[in-house]
Image (tube, rainbow, N blue to C red; front, side, top):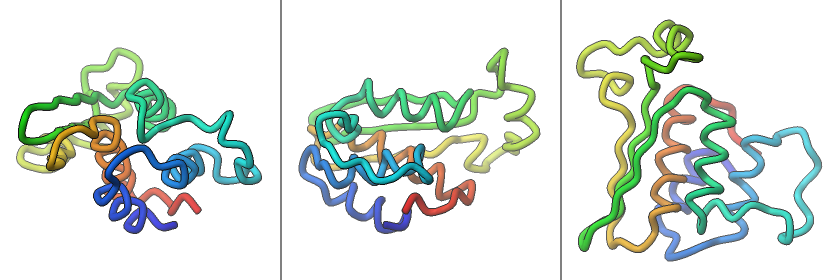
Length: 137
């Protein structure tokens, strides 16, 4: 599944989806043979803890936010140029030029609400798409 396809499927997901979880797992584990057991597969589309862990491993030094209200779930991801460990590298790799996505971040609004983990998964996939990450599968 390409990142475009993954984003499209995440945007249409009404709830947790193990196939989407498997494709998100593939992003971090592209050369590992396929995950055969759902028992050990992280629930990225259901758990903020799971998707945050993935973001922290794949995009070290990036900042993220998630919010929800009666209208939508919202997620934002951006390089944290002030990060004491990764800030210098992120400044060079993703310069915060005023008005660009690396200044504003990737911001996703998903309606209707009720899927905060999924909206963060979408934002994560869009960041990877923006930096030209290889397709996960």
